[in-house]
Structures are given as structure tokens and as C-alpha cells.
Image (cartoon, rainbow, N blue to C red; front, side, top):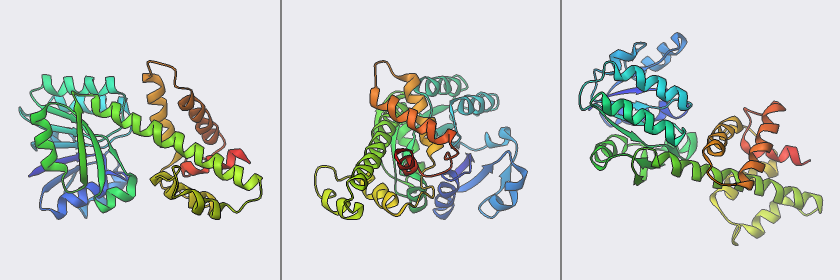
Length: 277
């Protein structure tokens, strides 16, 4: 299959490698001249968005809502009928619906398929996805992203995948704040944090996030697995799209913004713990 990939960062590059390894013919797009040599080791590179439209499948991995709309607006000018556009970005659900409309009006198909699992799961090919779009387009998309997404759920029409991803982010980051507070509570009472982790991981507090973040807090290793600025970006989208009061989201977002203002935007989200000292 011939596939164009737009957005070759921490997530897009591992995806490209998986697709290359499974025999797909790729074209990689970048706006950064300094990335051309690095990406050329994987597949041919272009700096022309119109050239990406020569392939029947286009994958997006860009940062925010405005980026997705800007890219899809440009793609729509040269899109061939039947082109499938798969967006793995995390954006506003309304923005996903706008992008889907632009692609459909140009004769293409659009699937919003944000992913969860972070860079490590992208590297191992074990991401999960929340998917929105028409059933036929999703069947096509599933054949494309099979090398790096281990499971997905179809939530409904375009934008529904983004709603589910934001639900994932709300639950995930509020959980991280809770873990930080639990570890601070243990330290305040002079009980060994590592032993507290051992005590609670088998109970109802046990979770994937506890297993990931707990040891980082105990060891004070805040090197980024997921940068706090990216979680803040997603929670800001969720806060803007909220149709009711979400107090835990708002409180956690305020702490994230405080962390970023203090210079911790590129640190792991577990570094929220620092604000509790």
C-alpha cells in the first residue's frame, strides 16, 4: 500500500518504521529541512503537501486542532477521490468534524483515530485507538494501522474518537495527580513510599498508571515518558469542550499549568509531585 505520513515526531516515526517493516511504500512529509536526512533513512521525504496527495492513504500525526484543520484544508485542494485520511492527533471533537467535512467535500474519507500508550507503545506497536468515522472508512483504516495499533473501538461518527481520547486523558491525568498526592501523604507521615506502593498495588488503587508513575515518584526520576505540556494541551482541549462542571479536571489542569509556568513543561507529568513539597 502507498501511504503518506505527515507528522514524524515521537509517535509518527515509530509508526512509519512499523509500516515500512510490513512492506508498505511510504512518503514522509516534513516542514523542517534539518529532518530530511534522518527521515530519508526510513523512506523518501517531501516538503510539498500536494505530493502527499499522490498516495491513496494519508496519515496525520500533528499537534493540535488548528494544525489538523490547516493541513486538511491544504490537502483538500489536491486530494484524489477516495483518498483515506487517518488522523492520530488528539484534537477538539468539533475540529475533527471540521476536518472530516473538508476531506469528504474533496471526495475523500476521514477517520479520527487518536491513540493511547505513548511513545513506548508506539515503538513496540501496542497502541490502542479510539476511532470515529464511517464504518467503511474504518475498515480501510484498520488494515493500515494494524502494524502499530493492537486494538481499537469504533465510537461513532467523526469526532467520537476524540471524545473518547479526551475521556482517557481526563481519567489518566487526574489519576496521576492522585498518585502524586498519595506518595506525598506517605512521605509526610514518614512511611516508606516504595513499601506503600507494594501495599496498595494489589488493592483497588492498583492500576497501569500506578505501576508507571509510582516508581518514578519514589525514585524522583522525572525524565519524560509523557511530557506534562502535552497532557496540559489535551486537558485544555477537554476543558474547552466540557458541557458541564468537571472540578477534578479543572483542579488538575491548574496544577499542570503551574508546573509548566515553573519550567517543568518538558518533564514527565509525574513531576506534579514537586508542586506538593
